[in-house]
Amino acid sequence: MLLLGSLLAACGDDSGSSAPTTPAAPTTDASATTGVRDTVPDTTTTTTVPEPDETIYYAAEGRLFRVVPGDGPEVLSDGPLDDQPAPSPDGEHLAFIRLESPGDLAGELWIANADGTDARLLVPIGVSEDPASSEGEPAAAFRPVWSPDSSKIAFMRTIGLDGGDLYVADPDAGTVTTPDLPLWVSSFSWGADSESLAYVSGANDVSPLDIGVLDLGTLETSALVEGTAAYGGVAFTPDGDEIVFVNSQLPLPPEGDGGFELSVPGIYEVALAGGEPEVVAPDPDPDDYRWAVRDTADCLVYARQFNEGIGEVLLHRLCAGDPEPATPVTNLALFPAVPAVAESTAIAYLVEGDEQALFVITEPGTDPIPIDEGVTAFAWRS
Image 1 (tube, one colour):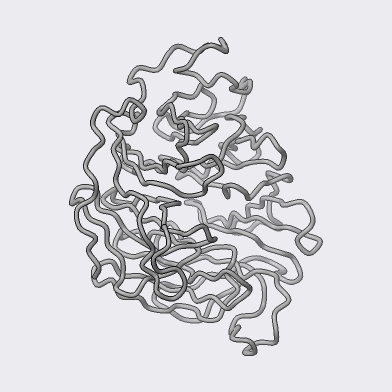
Image 2: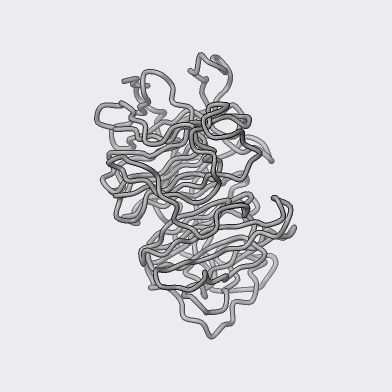
């Protein structure tokens, strides 16, 4: 186990690290700098909204916000370069990334109270320890995610590539750990026990990827599926017994050639205990599946793109007994953030277009609720 020692101490009186503790009343005054977002779209709607404690946190124009869909958002940080908010499941804290320059995808890892107060630096920009490809290069944090028990934060440290070395921070102990041999990943997901992380081994080209599990108690890894094209990411099911992943539609060689042991595109599940992966979405070939998770109703929520990756991206939801999947969104955007599914099964997502508009569908068949525009990242706190 690599122990990186004590993290940097809190940044004390840095005025840019805390937000107002009392949100302002709703206003449309363009001169307002706290409280409600100046450019909030009209949220008038007849749809139902999640329970009051089901809140979405998001980043827009370098600031952080939180909102119960249907209400006006509350400012949590004044930025100007804050991104990738990650609320803890217990509702006590907020992790986020503070960038160095506009356009950066990674930076320093910070932690604050859930309302944005008492923000402090947790993990500074460091140096890559990966001897295979990037040893000695500057490495910044991105994509923080809290463990289900709110005790740890998993994140990646990258040198600007689509992936990074996997790390786990313990804010209370003031430590960061990672396996002795750097574990380069492109995607990861917390297990329900808060002691395991499923991951997709990283690559920066069209190469075979392995899906495995990191045991945080021993910092040892075990392989689940080898030689995949899991470029669509990996996610634990809510019960923690299975792992969902997307095997991408690529011009792959025949099975077993070129290192690809799983060459058929589609959405698969594999048991955490191991075994053969099982196809869980209909007609996987030749449709291009891009991203998938299971929600708490055991329905499969996934993104699908037709016309060999050049057509519109659709969001589907397929439940047991459905003759065909529902399609709540037909103009889905997967960049800069994929959809997020709340415990209530509400779905937050971006739509295609320069506006980077964030919407929420609270229940199947209801109208989407507009949240904000210029959004770069978002996450539910249920």
